[in-house]
Image 1: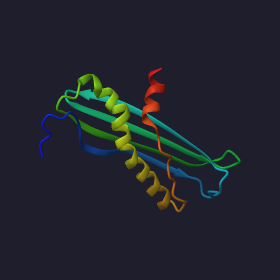
Image 2: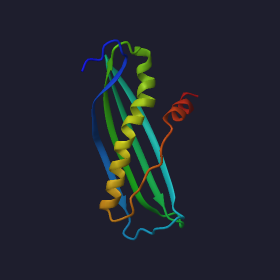
Image 3: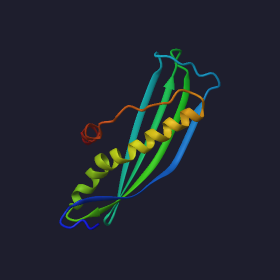
Image 4: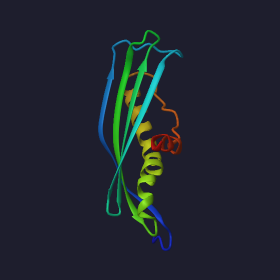
Length: 138
């Protein structure tokens, strides 16, 4: 199907680049866990291609401050500019929309890793990529 007269970006691929998982032998469960999620987004432009590399670092500590679970997942989304989308919008697209498109794949990967490690599913919270973009621009 052609995209006549419309502007935007088309997903070409989303690829797992790297992951790292570590857990201690005796993971304690409960509501008093300290979960920390950091997200890094890199946007690279090459002609009409926007490459968005998104890295999620997750650390779960128990109430004694011991790191029980450490996960790093890095994925790349490759997007093609279509139609009348302005070149100046490509970085903003990558930081907000591209990152938001990739994030569910990262969430699913982390959830599956935790289940395979025989710990309760780690469900990352939703992320407001617009807010994240605005904070980084300041």
